[in-house]
Amino acid sequence: MIQLLFMVIFSEMAVIMVLSFKTPFRKLVIMGLDRLKRGRGPVVVKTVAGTVFVVMVSSVYSMMEVQKRWVDDDGPVSSTDQVLMVRHLLEATLMGATIFLALMIDRLHHYIRELRIRRKTMDAVKKQGQGSDDKKPDGFDKVKSLEEEVMTLREKLKQLESDIEAKTKQINAAEVNTVALRKQSEGLLLEYDRLLEENESLRGQLQSLDRKLSRSDSKKNL
Image (cartoon, rainbow, N blue to C red; front, side):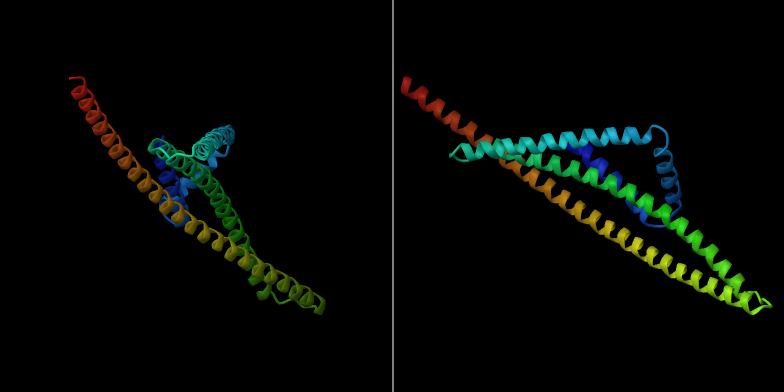
């Protein structure tokens, strides 16, 4: 399951990277997301997300159970409990990262579509403003009304440019969060491998001790 979660996370990160940069694959990904959000797609996505969330809550509950067992038992913590604790922690983190990246993909897709609409509106406003500047009306009232219209359109342009800048900052922040999650997942995987090696070493030591005890018992019987 951990390998599957890593594959899902890397796939989501690849989708985010494709959406973040203007490449030929960006249009294909956007078209795929548009189709996914039609028909029964949203229901299926919500069902899968709900299932992952329930499994994540189960892993968190298992972690709490292991921690409670550590508190109840005053003795040393067993290596098996440590491995279980790290495994549940890694699974919960990966599932949380999967849900977070899915939400990030949804927001990026929404922002990209909104930016396209804003840019088209801004281009239309610019053309309309240029056409209004080129016109030369005859009457004073007509000139005044056109000047007011140009001022209004310029204010709209400023507002649209500020919105585009804000959306761009949000996309950059999402990219930074993606890199941080990737580093955290790699660290947890290394910690998991280390604990597995310690568990194998402890098992080997226990087996050697059992052999020594069995030999000593056999000598006493003789």
